Amino acid sequence: MTYGLATVSLDGATRTVLVRGERFVPLRHWGEDRPIAELLRDWDAVVGRLGEWAADEAAFASAHDLASAQAEMPYRPGQVFCTGANYKKHVVGLIMGDPSMRTQEQEEVDPAELRARVEKMMDERAKAPPFVFLKLPACAIGPRDDVVLPFDVEKPDWELELGVVIGRRAHRVSEAEAMNFVAGYAVVNDVTARELIFRRDGSAIGADWLSGKSFPTFLPFGPMVVPKECIVDPYDLSMKLSVNGKVYQDETTADMMISIERQIAYLSSRVVLEPGDLICTGSPYGNGSAFGVFLKPGDVMEATIAGLGTQRNTCVAEAV
Image (tube, rainbow, N blue to C red; front, side, top):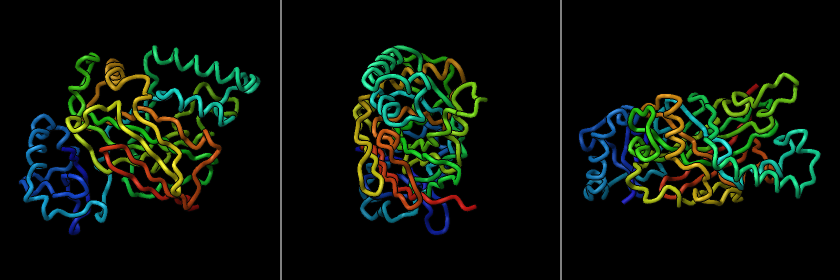
């Protein structure tokens, strides 16, 4: 049985609800009314009860339909970590499809040779420690909120990713024990200002992740957090993102190069992970850059990961 925690606006108040299938029941039905962020800080005590409540047939017999509810962001994440270049086909597609993602040296290489070089580079990267950058938690929005396209961004792009939600404090944990610190999974979309990642003004000393990743609304999150116990294999989840009904990303998590366990072990060797922290584990092939297509006002993104729900975000122009 698959179930998850979501946050909805209900009867004039914000409620934490348990979702099963397409329906939900407020947790207050079972005497629990804390927001998800607080539940994550008490996850070991909470997670067992969620399974019991999800089996409450009487409660779900008259449950509300999530599709017609006002679903909010599950909770405001703490630290947000993004594992970059973690899907081989994704990186090859970016570099081959978008000149702004290439170095000057790469621009001068024959396309066939460039593809071979990039594929070899990715094979080597899979053996190295993960490359992680930070995204501001203030970017996060709900699964049905508008994504605001900045007036000064030319190439806003989508990146559907599997989000990993931390449920226990972790510092210097091994790969073997890493999953013990995971509460669950969620759908995330690491929206990106593609042309701003590599600056061309002569002052760059590396990738500008602040400009490329952290505009307001650039992290649709949700609709729910699904406990890891509900997901049989996180490396066998279908991922699909469409824009205006046209499917661009249609891959699986099987193409992930550096595992969730390796990511957590690496991160916890550098920082302390806390309950409510969010790891965006990388995006598969099919970003707009691979096709020369970028988001514009009026576009509607629909993003789904099997078992984790669907986001539907409309793009709007920034008011100036």
